[in-house]
Length: 233
Image (cartoon, rainbow, N blue to C red; front, side):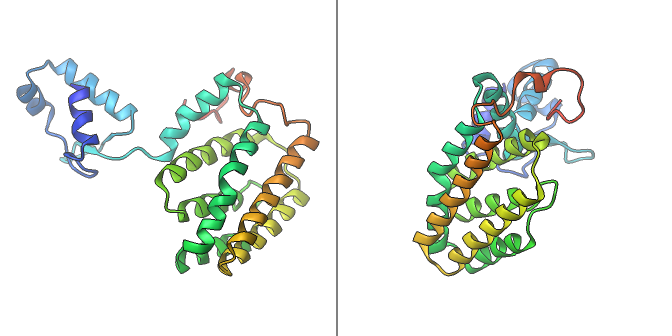
């Protein structure tokens, strides 16, 4: 039954916001038991394809959010032992090109939003850093790039929570963000790409200087105990 409903959602037959039939209606229409219906709905909810609300609306269709993708990504990064060096090498393959693309093709509103976030700087808790990169990637308009890097950002937010980021590091990154934003607003694709590459090179150097280049982003030990900051407990 879960497969039947999943196909209807992924094919577009059921769109976000649509309500599923009631439990009784599903039992009658599909000829299955109550327990089968409930199991199917739990599976779809776990996949981020449905959400249950109070009242008459019942179970509604939705599309998975980056947090859902990030959940699987965090687990994969833990099990594969992906390192901070792996992360930054991956980002260097994609984000400079994204910055160049946004400089040429981004809308005025998108560029303005990127510039505003860059001007606000980076708070001690990292606010401003992730928003800058998320806005830039989203402005690329590429759904694959946006989905993958949005999930990566969610994973990094959690993985970096215990890293010691000094005020100097934040100010240096904020200056770099402003330089990237200025190049994007000026529609200078080459400079945007170069500035982003320099920004990521500096981050890579910081990680290397900290002795974390070969360290796992999310070591298995982070999952031990009952820490309340573990994601998606």
